[in-house]
Image 1: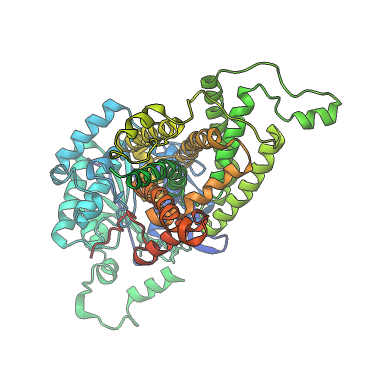
Image 2: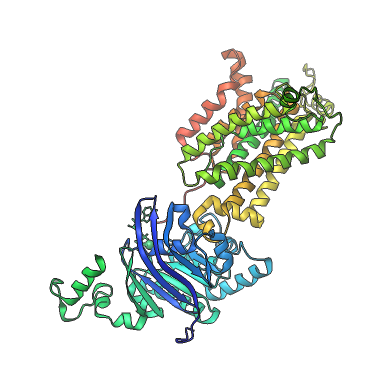
Length: 271
Length: 334
Ligand SMILES: Nc1ncnc2c1ncn2[C@@H]1O[C@H](COP(=O)(O)OP(=O)(O)OP(=O)(O)O)[C@@H](O)[C@H]1O
Ligand SMILES: [Mg+2]
């Protein structure tokens, strides 16, 4: 889907700074772009700031006493930092939150229908059919209470629910969390299909660098609130530092980081 | 049937009908608590305010008459017209929607993400503000409320039940107030339509979604403010109905706001998050307190047990089932 060379930029995050509770500085200048029709991975370890970045974009940050204090967020040429989440959903940007957050006491189908809150009746019906073709499992479980479905099904439910809003861009936060490897594979495959067949662009925050870089077109690596590396996914996959620190396969069996080039570079990222 | 049994039955039926009203008030609490996590201390005052407003509009009272007269040296009290009951109810609904809007925009929005206790205190402030505001707007005299619901003992029921008594018993028939029957019918219809609304409509579904997970609801583009305004309006509507019933029975006066105190044990019993709990809890409390008073209170304890019995019953339930009778099951997966 992603056609290098003549891609249109959908989302542009320019050097944003995020502060929680007026004092805790969490993002210290993050910039990234999401091209139309692409899958972009946002990688990094615990507490790197991935979720914060996604929430800054979707404007869910306000509800958590977080604030973008510097920089700008531009979607399709418009500044969107001051909109509310509902406005953003109407513009085509929706977030699937970390930890899935299905409506537990609603059935799977009711969950999906809630996703179409901003849509008309006809669009809702169409959307439901579309979601069920990509997630046949959800169709089987449509009348179950979401709280009683499996983790994988809940993740599908959360993605399906977001799809019901007919978004152009989905911000997907850690879809692999707590799922068995083959389920992770299944979900990323569906994401890839959605990307290729429905033209949905994705920005995916992931700790599972391996899977994310296999499915993404390009990636950003975040550390302590800064982007420390970026590039096409294939290049990142081959990068020795990424291999060592994120893919867990350092060559030459280096065990001591002390005198390696990578270590020094890593030090620089951290400073 | 023996006369004793028929008397007991009469007490139970009257308790059931009082219970319906308790349920209705409790329902107002549950709606708001579920959707916005706020324990709305002002629910009882909302019923009082609604009843005052209804009577005021119906009888053509000039709002803020005292204030106007004090400032301009005039002597206005009434416009001199009467508004038909149905129209007056409609206006009252509009007033309560406006009230909901103000509460959300002025108070709740500013307190988003605060501790529940802070929100609770805000509603205490709101309750006393409303009480004063209601008195200022419509004055604090005791008023009669009559929207045309028939009242008085039902002769039909009396005639029918007289024949149930066994041969030779001294029994004069059962006393059931028609107003109570109407109140029950209306309350049942209201509850059924609220349940249907929550279950089958788009805003109803959004309301349940917000109750389940507000952040997730926000993330799919549901505006919490809108849902809150809707829920407070619904609670306002429930308050109107409760205010009409209670007001028709015992007049519109300050004590009307104390029906909230009757709803508390219902909530303790039924759970704060369960609509069915509010309904069943209300009925149990209504029947329970009347029967207790009749069987034990009056003969052995000197009466007036209705003031505390409900709380004791609720406390006992609470100890054994803290989540309430129908408290929503907390879904936990391992
Ligand atoms: N609501 C909040 N208030 C204060 N600090 C917060 C809040 N949310 C996150 N943080 C802090 O911000 C930093 C970044 O958190 P964030 O959740 O964005 O990381 P992440 O990359 O998503 O991590 P993970 O992979 O564990 O989800 C962490 O240090 C975290 O403690
Ligand atoms: Mg995260």
